[in-house]
Amino acid sequence: MTAGICGLGLIGGSMAKAYKAAGHTVLGYDKDEASLGYAELSGIIDGVLTNERISECDIVFIALYPQAAIEYLEQIAPFVATTKTVIMDLCGTKKQICARGFELAAQYCFTFVGGHPMAGKQYSGIKYAKETLFKNAPMVLVPAVYDDIYFLARIKKLLEPAMFGRITVTTAEEHDAMIAFTSQLAHVVSNAYVKSPTAQNHKGFSAGSYKDMTRVAWLNEYMWTELFLENKEPLLFEIDTIIKSLTEYRDAILSDDADTLRGLLRDGRIAKEKVDG
Image 1 (cartoon, rainbow, N blue to C red):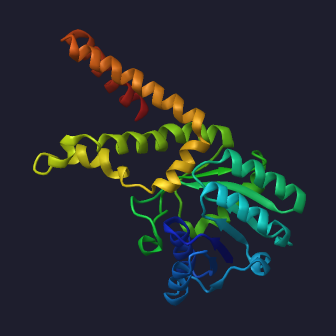
Image 2 (image 1 turned 180 degrees about the vertical axis):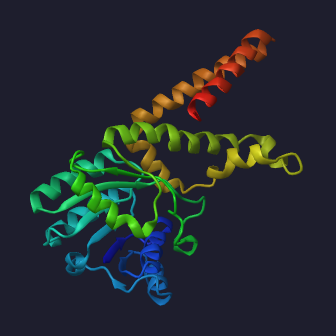
Image 3 (image 1 turned 90 degrees about the vertical axis):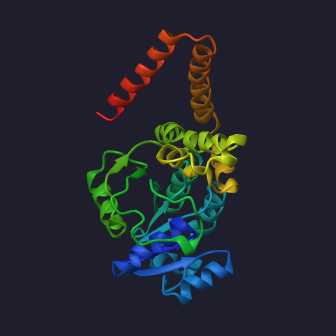
């Protein structure tokens, strides 16, 4: 198999390492010459992914920010001259990239699938890439057709080197609504939480709870700004929901209303039990 990867940061670099470790040929490209040079010199990739070499690939991953991913997809679409090549983006939101991807795929007769690997680190860049980053991690797929079992089997086969665990198939709209809750809200809350002046004096007083709450506060503000604004409506719904809940806790504490506070805490515990099955 030959895998092409555009964008050799944490996600793209880890994908390159995974396919290389599985014995496959990897072609890569990054506009940052230092990252591209590092990938070549360290043997993470076997060569540069040029437009002319797109059709050599069985699968091409686009590991860029959403708008850059759309622009790259528009650039390479005329060069995907074979039905064997599957193009898959790895963006954190799906609605815009999938709409454009399906449109271009129909125009130029190639296969496009939206993809979102549910794995990552708080650090970015190829130097933090790891061949086992996706091992047993969930992978979300957004195909143009949802009931073609042979097509989905083909995609799963192409993804085997990444060693994903559960693969979920959904729509772009459902993906973005769920990701606003499971990922984006967590980043907003974590990032806001560490802005308390008390955080500067936490050493000696913090343990697991603090670490869990603050891990994703260390983020790439350029990427997350683009993701948040693209997914504005679902994320605003989640932010408004948590603000409403926090206000209820605050009001109960302010008024020394133990019964209401106990009820709120009980409801949260029960909600967590239901979520965890």
